[in-house]
Image 1 (tube, rainbow, N blue to C red):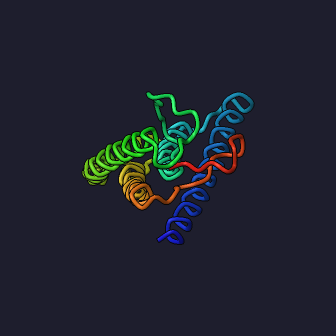
Image 2: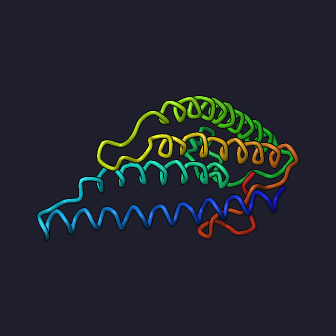
Length: 177
């Protein structure tokens, strides 16, 4: 399971980088064509918007696995409390609650995103003529991987396995629950 999650995360990260590079190229083309040649490409703004949509949802999905999404630390646990303490148990229960909420939202987003994608089959972009299902597919793809990552994070919490080490600017001996 860990190997699958690692491969999925790496593949999704690589796809995100490729999409971001494509976004940068399209925006650069738009700037050059508009301000230097005074003849903008009509499709570039729309394609940039579609690419940005995919990049944002890909990044959101990756953030779920890495637990980098927004977290509000209500109880002020600046450092991981020692195992067995009340603070530790409270922190674990709160993280489980957060993971269940992310999981529930992701399942709902997948369901609604799939319906939206089906509606996109009958629509195309105004200037780019890209089928909107290709754009809307970002929603169920991201939500599906969020479900996988959310389940993995929840399993990690329930089995007591840390999801990942803290980033370099933290103490490397600490682990995130």
